[in-house]
Image (tube, rainbow, N blue to C red):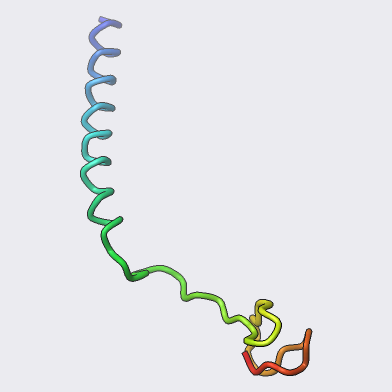
Length: 64
């Protein structure tokens, strides 16, 4: 009985792994970031992250 349960579990896991491998190439082919977060803004002068928008508080030049 225990051998049957273990073998069914392993078969179930193998089937799940096959479905997981089939799904990856379709997601990986997308060049866009559909459903993801937008890229963070960078200051054009110093290159630091500007999370608030507006003028850069580090170099006080860039508008980000």
